[in-house]
Length: 238
Image (cartoon, rainbow, N blue to C red):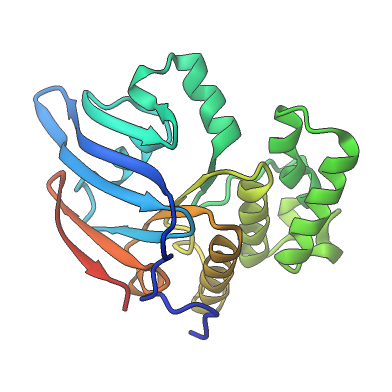
């Protein structure tokens, strides 16, 4: 994979964006996360890998403010998630976090441009700026000519590129990617990984990516290996 920046070269002197300290989460008597700790810097890509059921999705949900940890601390720059109300968490997700899903989650009744525009509408970004920023992002993901197409008219690779543009539209501090290439063929998956690496580096956005794919993990500066709710080791990108 021909990346502009080697996955082994982590951002130098970059500020810490995400700090996770001793985060635990139980569902009934079952401990799903057990004192998980790590940090993530601006422009850094980290893969979260491990077998199904090891706690990866639960951790992602806690980091995104969708679920609450039972103990420990999650800080996104100046915001301590455990101290925020439900409304404040919703605001933080809307303003400061971008999410990319395996199955795209585009709204079928909106065009590609309108899907990208939506996060900016929710933040009351002025119309002219929304249009400028949305079209610039579609150009970056090479979909300018598909701006008026609906999701049902797009290929899987095109839908994922729209989803990436949407996740970046509100200029988040953190991207959470949940198996972003899991529903794509190998060629489209490789293109999406190249794009994520390029944009996260250029825009200095921290990215945590849950993946089972060795190819996806290779674009990351390091990988955190989870088992039974614990990070058991950390490795550098391939």
